[in-house]
Image 1 (cartoon, rainbow, N blue to C red):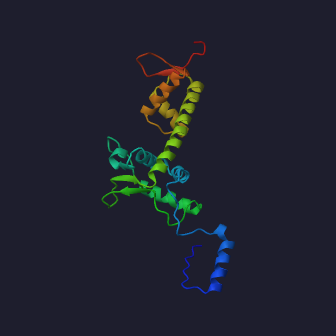
Image 2: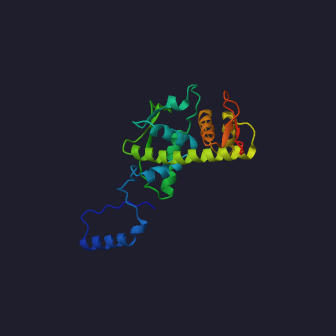
Length: 216
């Protein structure tokens, strides 16, 4: 239940009784005058994790830029066919989910804004200036954990399945267990695993790897 109460020039006895009632039920009340502080990294992290994958990517790309703005053309990629449909709605839906879970107030402002000429077209996305440092910190923290997890998962897959591994096979293997990466990132993980001596290159001039020989 949402209740807006305005009492002008209250009777002293009534005011005292009302304040006592509010104090008694303080744990069940939420002030409509204090919005959630998006400058808090913990709150920014909670919002980021509640987003679907495409919206998370938009937020990551925006957070990676000093001004917190990422053009839609960058998100769509060189071919221009990257899908952004529904992304603005995803940011709003995450905000509403947070309200239902009492993470923030119903009138909380969006931390990520779609910018464009209107009529459904989006020119880019921007993180609010006051929220940018917190979201940059949150994204960095989760990316570190995510990248470590991707590396561990790929190492396990290579060790378990054996055979030769290139970027394409690595992308497919991680995709099966919920890690969406591109071939550039896959090649980096393979190089990292080779540097750790967990896998070895098949030939010096080929970016193909296999499990390391334990006897070497």
